[in-house]
Length: 351
Image 1 (cartoon, one colour):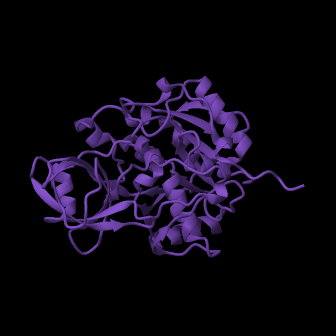
Image 2 (cartoon, rainbow, N blue to C red):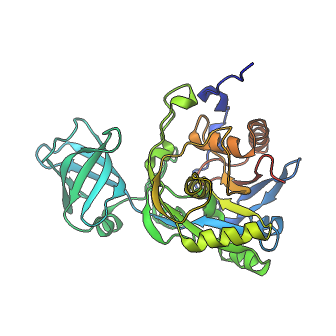
Image 3 (cartoon, rainbow, N blue to C red):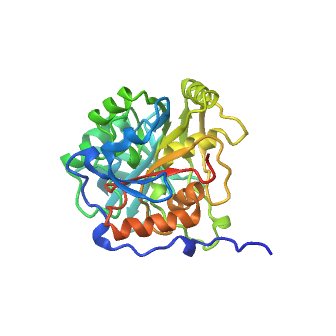
């Protein structure tokens, strides 16, 4: 008898609204850490992470940098309000792809005045795989304009307006390559003392880049997982990281992905059977039954009900195991989502 195909409803759970973290912990590494690497989960604090890893283990982090991707403006011709969320800065010019919210869809050739008229953008047309985005041409360098006039693109479940603290805390200590519109949140817990402790313990560190898109928050709108299509994200796996992973494999040391974005980059780069260096785009949708080739352990935050990230985590650590861990987290009042707490998982079936 064939097993029943998984549906979105299989990844639902009840989450009290007061467990959705609206602000980060006072100190990055003071957040809680659910240690799920043993049969019985253990409640810890994040700064205990170095003690849970063995000398020689390889941590891989995502060094993407969140851009101030949210802009407010108005149509130059009519004065109608427009909110933009830049999804991607296109290479080699002043053009971007963006989500737009307006009472009526702006037409190609129309002009939007952003940031109280500080600069204009021309609507080139619709774009993206499903034509849900808008192709905009900015007046000058998009990165500079966004840094000067944009707002931190906080997730939709964070209800306060962005402020100076968000500009600092919704950015990881590894952030180097601008392009993300959402933070790789598992890395938000790292600070200088934790990094020093990891180094003292002999934990190695490598980097990948995956520019997280706004699609990470988009709901799954079909019931059968097989019918869902993921948004595309740009990633880069350096040759040095591939070499570090190969060395860890040869020495029988573990590869620990910091966050689902790091895991998606690594596993996307290994879909051909072996891990390859280079830059590409991925729309990899990881669900139970996926064969993991690279990652042994995963450090991750707690994710939204019915989300693709919860499906990924369930594929990695086992559906029943993750359901039990989430029940534990709710009962122990862990904080959820981007500014929430973390969990360390072992790959299902890993020795």
